Each structure stands twice: as structure tokens, then as C-alpha cells.
Length: 577
Image (cartoon, rainbow, N blue to C red):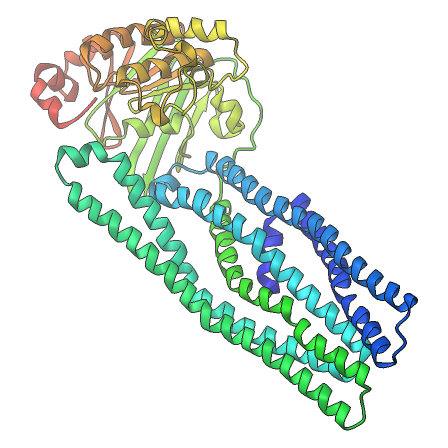
């Protein structure tokens, strides 16, 4: 029990940990106020038995009860607020910390790990941990502290009964170990079912177009249904696993109360305990384990908290790329790859590649699908770290740059554009949040999207659905180009930016790209001849190697992949360049 509480405290930052410590300190004070009912009961019983009821005794009893009740209410209010703030704030900050941590993880992590897992940890798991931690830790800590303080008060009145109470607490802690072990067996399954359900639902929603297209709705609904059913069963199983252990804990506390009552009566009839103490101890037998019962009910949830902490730490413990380089502003933006090799899961994707890209030039990368085109651009931008060789920007190894200073040199336009659920203006100024509205409009005009934005009901203040769902593919692409224009980075990487766009949008998109790449270093992965033929340098990448290099005129004059692509459009169906 205490181990799980400590694990969550260690999970908190210093500020929130201190809030829990303050809450625990206030919990001791609250427990003392609760325990003050014992001397109040003692004085009342003694006055009745001795037939010495007077104003002074009445005032003492009423005073003790008022101090006990009001003091407990006031302290509980502050203690609860501290624990609530600390619990929710911890999980909110951990979401942000995980998000920041993910920024600097190798891209391979996102290939290995499903979106459902990441989403489940940052949403469901953290939400559950925040909710449960706020309640469970409060109840467990307060219940334990109150029981111990009340037991110490009883110890003052009668050491024998006090020792019995302490023994009862010890027995309770032993059964609590059993409770935690019972829940531990199903906690992993519960959290695993949470993760799988989120993953399956996300996959269903993201792939709904393909599901409809291939008329496989029933099969996918069946997968979603099975995931939800597994989640339901796991939740029920977790509850059923905890019920017997919690029931035994509650039975033990009740039996210890019976023992205290029985022993007190036995002491009285043997003449070793006065009647006033006997009656007081009988009252204590009902009161002493009341808080512990509630704590015992919530201890079963501590294991869920512990598992949630483990899942979050599992992500935070993944080694980040070395991002603590220098803040470098290179003298030039020449790019050089020297004998670069890169493998993923023992499969070599880039094999001994050497190339130069001069600043303010356009380089087109073409070749069969899966040949390594996107990987080369990812290595240049250091989304991956090379395993052999080196990547230089401005005559400095990209690993020497701090990650943020390196990213200042790049803007990206991908085939699949992601827009955030926000206004169009805020999506354009995403990389420059302080940019003026005039700058946003200027970027939009260059990206050829000002006109369609102004045709929308709220213009630049129009809210975009999540992922840009309310816009067409070409409109989203042009907004992403406006975003890149706003950033004004010296190197532009375009990954099949004009693919799957209708002719009308393609013309506008081409103009937008021309504005974006003007006086910039441009690296484009493309599959349309008119996109690449005017590039100063064309690289043909196949099976991880650069098999051809030159201008359009040079490559068309020699046998090879590029000439085949140009001369035979049917060949292009089996690969993309």
C-alpha cells in the first residue's frame, strides 16, 4: 500500500509532491480532531456515571465536540483541495511531458508503437490515474493516519486495548498485501484492454473511407465490438478480483472491533477496567476502524495507479536522440552526406550514400517505391540518426546542432497534411504563433489560398475540423504551404506534395510551391515529370543506393530507371518517384 503511494509521489514533480506532503500533515491534524471525540465521550460518560453533570462539564464536552467537528471540516477542506490539485496537475503535466518527450524520440518508435498505445496512455491512463489518485490516495492516507492516531489515543486510555488495536492494524496490512496481489493479476489485462480498444477504434475511424470502399464494415465493426467486449470483461474481472480481498479486509476490521468490545467487557467483569473506560472503549470499538474500512476499499485501486505510472514512465524512459547540441546558425546551407548507411530492424534501407546539395538549388529525388527516398530526407532533417557516415549542414554535422536550432533550417510539405482543430489563421501561424494577421494574409496569398479562405463564412477565423476534415485535399495542402511560407526556413523538403491532387488544385499548388521555394534550397520527392525536369539535380534512388545522378537532359540520355520512367509511363504504375 505505502509502496504504491510512494511510487505515485515519486511520479509527481516537487511542487505537487509537496502538496501531498502538506496534505498528509493536515491529515494528521484532521485525525487528531477526529480522535477528540474519545475524550469528549469519556467526560460525558464519566459525568453521567458520577452524577456530576454541571455547566463546566457540559461546556467541556460541547467544546470538544465543536472543535472536533469544525476543525475536521476546515482541515479536510484544505487537505482535499491540496490533494485534488496535486493529483490532477500531476497527470496534466505528465501529458505535456510525454508530448515533449515524444518530440525527440527516433521515428522508429512511432513505427514500433501503435497510435492506440500512445493515445491510451496520454488520455485514458492519465485520466484514470488522475481521477483514481485524487480519491484513492486521499482516502488511503487519511484512513490510515486517522486509524493510527485514534489507536494512539486509545493507547493513552488503556494500553491493553491500544495494543489490540495496533495488532488489528498489522493484520489489516497483511491482508492488504493479498488485495494488491489479487488486483495485480488483472491490472495489466485491464490497461492492455484499454490500449487495444483505443487503438482499434482509432484505426476504424481513420480508415473509415477504405472500410466503406471495400465494404468491410461488418468485419471492422466486429473487431471494434470484440475490443469493447474485452474491455468490459477486463473491467468486471478487475472488480471481481478486488471484491473478495476487500471483503476480507472489512471483515477483519469488524472482527477486531468485536474483539476490542469483548475484551473491554471481560476486563470490566474481572475488575481490571472501570465502567467509564469500558463504555468509552465500547464506543471506540465501533469508531477505531471506520476510516480504515474506507481506506481498505480504495487500496485495491492503488495497483491501477501504479500500473498507470509504469506505462507513463515506460514512454518517458525511452532514450531520446541527443538533442543537446549547440545553437548553430550555419554560414551556408550546403548539405553533404558522406558514406551514409541506415538500417531499420536489420533491414538496410540506405546503403553507403554520398551526395551534395548546394544551397539555393532544387534537387529532385525519384525512384521506385520503398527505395529509400523519404528516408534520405528524414536523415537530412535528423528525424533519424545515421548508423554509418555523417550528414553535414553548412559544413557541420547535424548532430552538433541542438534539435531546435536544426529545425529552424527546415520547412516540410508532406503528401498527407495534418491541420489542427483551430482557426485557419492559427493553423497558418502554427510555427510563428505571434505573427500578425497581415503576415498571415500575405503568406496565404503567396500560397494561393487567400481567395478560398475569404469565401468561407468566417474567413480566417473559420474553425477547421480535426485533421482538416472540413477542407479538400488541395485546400489543406495550400494551407500547409502557407504555414511553411510563414516559417520562412531556408531549406524546403516536399514529399510528394502534388500527389493525388485534382488538375485545378494542382495548378494552384504548383504556383504556391514556386512561391515557397523561391530563393530556397528545395529537396522534392515527386512522381510527375513536369515537377522534376527543371531541377538542377535529379537523384535516382533504388534499393537504398543512388543509382543515377544528373540533370533531366543528362539522365534521359543514358539507359536506366529514369529513362524508362520517362519513355514508358506504364512502368511508373509499379513505383513512385
